[in-house]
Image (cartoon, rainbow, N blue to C red; front, side, top):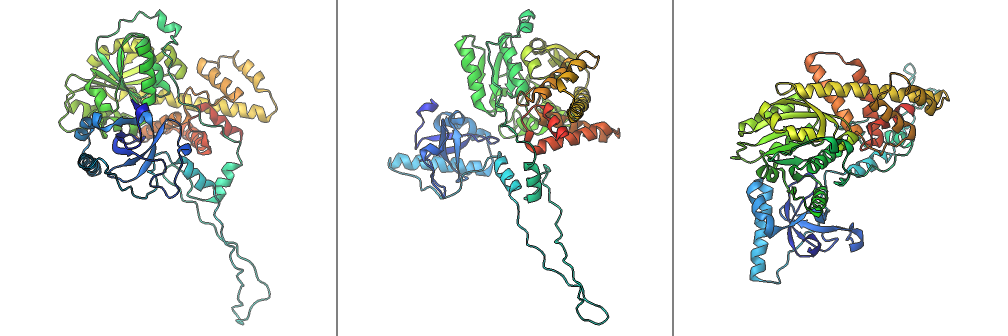
Length: 510
């Protein structure tokens, strides 16, 4: 359907981080000060004009739906004034078009709409030095005679302290940008993980899994979520998918349909997933995203009057105990059941189905998810009331985070001493220090394969910060964790977001 889209079509276009919005496909370059050509659009993208907000954006065709087909869902879901204005404008346009088939919009001249991913523009501002004028020489006056002293000195201009934004990025200070550029160049960010349903792990083949007859929703197809979904489908579970990148969902469904298993459906909002599922799993990036999927626009429980009676909600995102309790209260107030199910493991363990699941909350929901937990992991623990699983997960994560910093610093010191990292690792693997996690990270450091992402550095640092927040509440000092967290933050500031956490070696080495 999307391949038939053409200029003039009325659609619902979805930008990253926003709900699908009434729009019209227009000529590329419309509305901008410097018109684009068709060549300037990426392949598979369309230039759209948004009603209501009156701006423009290049949108991937997978994130565009025809307005007439999907409008009923979204008009009833989204109640913000700007959205209502957009719906009113597009309906007025349709009405005018029915009266006069030649009716056209008068497109305003405006810059393209900004997405939430303006990191490139921010970085360009960071590394562009600001020129400061030299301060004029200041002559010291002789207080006794009032005459000018023969001796004078130049007073150096005092530089102000850089202002930092909430993410710790300097606000346009050239010296900071120059310092960053002096570090080794950073490769392009790793590509988003793909799912191959035909890649069935040997471990999953040995499991005797009787798939539940319930329908399971799954929100999030990141590094861990992709592997979990693959094993759920291969073990015979019915799965409804939602991801901010709809292309991932469509690729999985296409594979499942090719195999004629009929187990996968895709939806364009978390609310749709909730409506069509018995139990919903959420596995996204951070506490903010986890809560947004529940109470945000088109979220699972975002609409007044929605009832989740008989529904179960399982939060697998690495979050803090308080956020988990907040989500639990929202779900229970809507009549649903809630379970926090934190996972210990990496991308490879998610693909193999060997994760460790730490659960707490509604015990009946824990039992209803047993076939799913068996498909995604080697064991699942029930730890009691909501909060215990998230606390346990953060404790284990800080142990891994501190250990990884020690490994990186040891290998950096070996390199400074002229000792081959290969020799160090050969000896390391013969000692009782060796374990699968440390050996794998050491191998990535030795080969500098930081684009091979088992756990992204931003996710590791997020867990370290949440552990430190927990320690503040408990008044428990965490000296090593605090120091390790600074190493992770510095590595992220150097531009390594999206890379494996082992890339902190670059911070310790340089």
